[in-house]
Length: 160
Image (cartoon, rainbow, N blue to C red; front, top):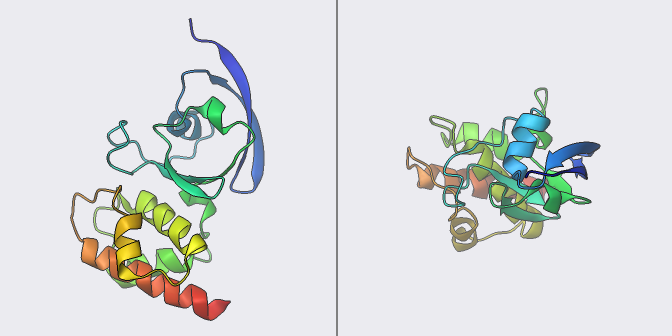
């Protein structure tokens, strides 16, 4: 029997108080209860990183987190990074460096990279590789992705 429980979570700066089924993943909660479809569902086993969000300051695979576990949490999704009128430096760097091909992995990659750069604005190449190690790109242009993240780090450091 699936029980429901209200989940109160701050997502991208807005508080949502929405019922969730107790076995519902955060990925499903974001996509189907709140319409935030930028969080992609890929493998649903935590292997691809397409569903990466930042929860309480750390990158997590939202397919491995239950929505009820996010009760009281602060969550950032791709929808909370930049805006249509003003892209975040990571989003712009992905465009500038050709790091977006099919685009399926891009939201998870950008969110994982933001989590890294929030903690380590001067992240070294090895740190960048480790931060995105849990994110698979089927187009496999990890070099362009890593260059984009490094470039965004420089822009972010210059802006502080």
